[in-house]
Amino acid sequence: MIREFRLEDLHKVIYINRTCLPENYTPDFFVYHFRDFPEGFLVAEMNGTVVGYIMTRVDRGFDYYSSHRAFAEKGHVISIAVLPHARRKGIGEALLRRAIESVKRRGVKEVYLEVRVSNTPAINLYHKLGFKIAKRVPKYYADGEDAYVMSLQLD
Image 1 (cartoon, rainbow, N blue to C red):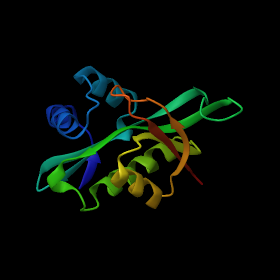
Image 2: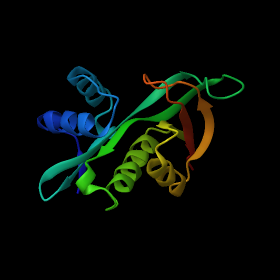
Image 3: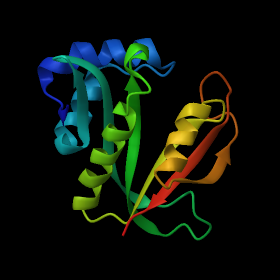
Image 4: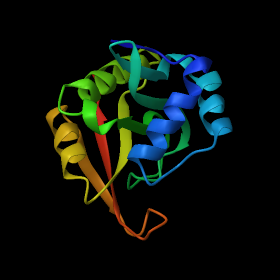
């Protein structure tokens, strides 16, 4: 089941973030994004337990990933993670689809995300949903790994 994040989910989301990702965020970071765009912060439950989350926002400003650097409003997938035992069950895809609908309701025409170039399962999921690699960013992550910026054009 996919539902909107609630503050009582915070400890579980932090646990998932720290278990699944090398990029760890502070509790305040999660709360800020929840308050800024609550309908874009979703959790997935299995048997009543939170096993995954996705956090999105709408970015407003100059589009530094395009060649003409125009002002843009885009959906941004900040973080997505699913606990290892809950993977390969369609949870990540369901979270992503719901989050895309949330930003689409805000009127944006594009959603983007950053992903480690080594994260083949995630890249494959994003391709499946129509995302395309827009750019490679050298040394994007703190450990020096490159990232792909992937984007999805919305109807």
